[in-house]
Length: 468
Ligand SMILES: Cc1cc2nc3c(=O)[nH]c(=O)nc-3n(C[C@H](O)[C@H](O)[C@H](O)COP(=O)(O)OP(=O)(O)OC[C@H]3O[C@@H](n4cnc5c(N)ncnc54)[C@H](O)[C@@H]3O)c2cc1C
Image (cartoon, rainbow, N blue to C red; front, side, top):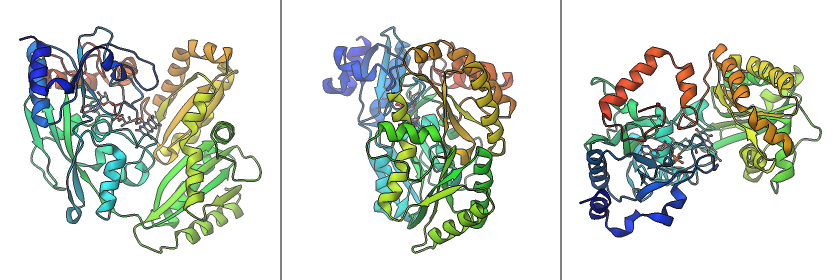
């Protein structure tokens, strides 16, 4: 029987899409890549995933795992040949169990992140991963990209939130690693290989995830600052003063306020006068009635008196808190209204971040004078989205210079001990960057791991590693 016949036998007709029906799975959400799929498989069980991979391995057919398709690097899009099978995890979407006493839950890969957050909350627990895409990205995608988001400062990245994984290997064998243990020193950390592997080593089908005490008190403020250096100093002051209760600390440039006020309904500048930079800071605690607002106001007051902080507004209720967060979370959407731009997802040590902004902004001003710089993001993690925006004809000219700009900014990040991909991964977009910046020994080890786990090269071919 041919492969499609075998897959139909495994899945039943309705769960195997072909032709026009594959279209939603053939491009990434930014429309940077458009491919063509052999078919789209939508398995409903781990056993089906295992049989599909065994059949594809036998037939030497590439398999492209597909989560919520919110990734920024084209990792979930098939190539243009029409020979790769897209494997959608969307129907593997059960929260299998919650263990509040162990502060853990087991979720299948196709669970949408927001559903997992809700499931944890329903058991009086907190799952802290939080991204702007949380209403559509899936746990399997979050694990495979090692997603970050707005709480990394306190809880770490997705890699830090995992206790165990269930994975189907390229040849169809199932790795049953759904442990709920926090201590288990029994040899190599095999699970770690699949975190951030972007579907190139196997298909994650379920994960055992860490939960935390429910958040019962928060305090949020938007703080005006003269420069990013003040943000780094203020972050340290807040961490010290609050007993490390800072759960988010996001940098916003003036242009972020201007673009969101112009394009996003309901967004307005909450401060009277314009300022060059802002930090959105949030403290949180599991203790009900914790006086975090008073603590935040007092610390910001002292910082204002010393000249570090220019102005600040504290959210007085949930509505005002949501309004402050809306400014931060809608920057990417507001940018889209302004036309084409260049995006960079860099990280450096937090202490080196002001230097990156100063040197990066100076380079942009000198070499791309028509571009507007929109540098925003997770300053508490040393991670900035260092984006350049053009308008009309300027935008098209900017895109033509993407290689030169990327090189300058990625070289600058590397010179400061940083990374060219802080939280978005490699996918198809940054394969050449990985080859350029990864140490040769590390790259050789990655290829060796790939050959060992996927000798026929069927798992997400061409993503992360070239020719693999
Ligand atoms: C508005 C917006 C805000 C965002 N904010 C952030 C942010 O703050 N931080 C951040 O880190 N990212 C952010 N992202 C990027 C994106 O949401 C994350 O990378 C997310 O983790 C991708 O999940 P997904 O389910 O959409 O994966 P997809 O895009 O479907 O896939 C991503 C990669 O994982 C692989 N994959 C998917 N599922 C599996 C599986 N079960 N097994 C093996 N491989 C699999 C795919 O093949 C692909 O290579 C944002 C995106 C948007 C649109």
